[in-house]
Length: 485
Image: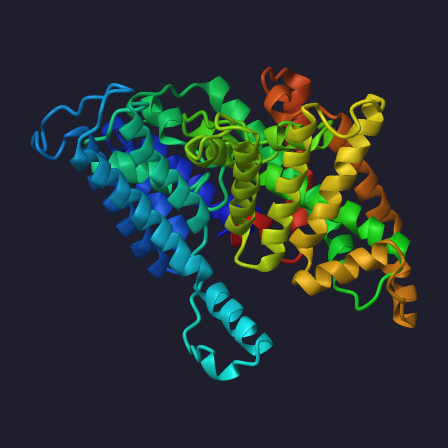
């Protein structure tokens, strides 16, 4: 079930809001958990069992870390003091949590990739007889990359003393499974919502702002991302493409992935507000960044900050000398690329960004082009990011290099490539890509625009929602890009 579908907008969401607000306050987390499991299990009920098992392991590990198992089921769970020594039992509990989550993610996301990579290497070395003849193909559970990171943050935050463990299993299950951010983020750390799980407010103002977030997020997806995606799909799926068309396709994809993902994040944050939760910002106008370092402070903030705090800093961050700093940056970005998908193209994408981040750190300045005017710095950063998106969008690594070759005129365009212009340069698509670029580079963020909602803003949000729902009638099913991660 996706947010930009008739099933969600017309049926699930009204039902969820009605049941949540009609339920007595002590039962609202139970109602929200049940609704979230329904939402998650709609495509494949078996995935629910997997998420429940992961939730159970981390719940018990959290209680063990906080001493809740030894104090009895009705005992008070105290928050650990940061900086104090931890017992071997606490260290074992957090190790079990981290190992179980990473094992779960590793098996379901990377089993097929590992087998295929090994077989390809064996064939390349002339050792085909050593290949693994596996008839098993593992289906990737939706959102597993997100909820394993989120659930793992619970035990890590409890272990560090940044949050108190939850005694009530339903409260913890609600945190892990909450449908607004379950499948594609933002990755909400436990410490960010721990107090809200115990007590939060429900106001008309918060609900109205949430509804505005949802309206603008749906508009981003339906009115901007989907049409830009048609241009990107046409150019990237073509056998050959002319240089100008290739660049046009890259820009269209850059707009698609931004408005697709930021649109989902807006809807997730909005739905959270409608349920009384305040989730963290996940985007901060990333295409206005003036360097790659600044880009990663603005793009998918919940992931980049998660990797910084739970991986980069524990590895030593920038505290162990320059060489170790560059190595840590490269390693974190390689793993970040692999987190996005089980394919070598994502490894190369992560490696490219890691190399750029390390190079900027070596220079000790904002970027390689810090002396350029601000508009040129923004343009140069967007160019580098867009080139990286080629690896993200291409079918495989070979296809990515072929497409890059087309962008610089190294590939010979076959006669069918001349037909692309009739498909991608239609006024509707040209106008949509232009509007998307204008919004990405100049418009205020949803986060800021919705802080105050005078009548005219409310009318704009209602109008965009109405137009988006109309456009949904004309568009084929097009799920959010990050659903596959």
